Image 1: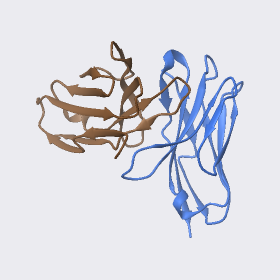
Image 2: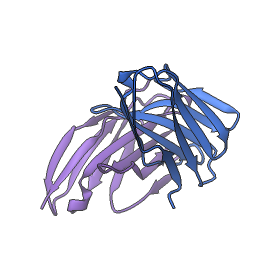
Image 3: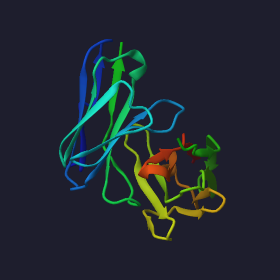
Length: 112
Length: 111
């Protein structure tokens, strides 16, 4: 079984709809991240969390919110989806600073 | 926001040949440098992490160097194989404990 899972894997939604992307991990890591990938750009950090009570904004948090329900679960919400949020979204986890990231399989989101 | 740059954007290499490519990053407040391998339709997979204090973690046969003073890293692939075809992402951990990624170098190994 995969250590980091994301649901859904693909989603098409309409402008203005609320959508939630979910991430679960079995690695026992405290640190979790949400990244967005657009063609020609590097992975951009949306939000990150270093433990259940710690939530921090990344580079591009506008239009997004997150919830850290437990050590193993970190959800990303788009309150009112817009077309320029069409992208590939990755969840990742890490153990300590200086350790590498473990990525989930990604969620491809299309907002029409 | 850090500006991590990778060059070239893409390259082709003949099977069996060696190649390398560059990642440049701001050297101030540097903590660690990461390299990831990303194949189409898969998720990025870690290859290296190297920290300022010299700690290093690596996976596979690919090697990397790090110059923290001038802010660059090279990733080397010796004896390229078709399975080395992928996009290689560099990421710098500097300010605020956040990783900033470059746009990647796409490597195509020709048989």
